[in-house]
Length: 91
Image 1 (cartoon, rainbow, N blue to C red):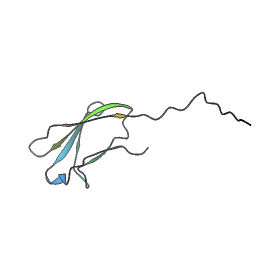
Image 2 (tube, one colour):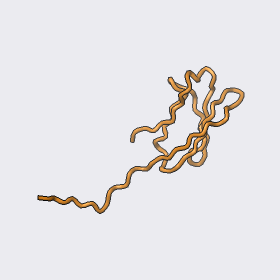
Image 3 (cartoon, rainbow, N blue to C red):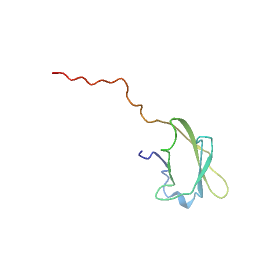
Image 4 (cartoon, rainbow, N blue to C red):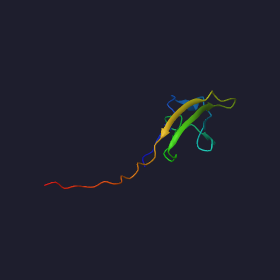
């Protein structure tokens, strides 16, 4: 399955951000993500089960975290296999 990613688009955030906190995943675990790459972070969401999600992302430094930015989306499941189809040949 192709990846579905949550990507931070902050310009050069590593200078001011120590880590990001992602909350709202199934079971409501909190995930801390270190800044990396050209973006602040890139988090793979492709393994989420189908359903509606309301994630919250905060940027943190050694003193505090920002107010959480909401990100709401629906993860679609795999399409169901078709049933009851018949192929007819016409002359």
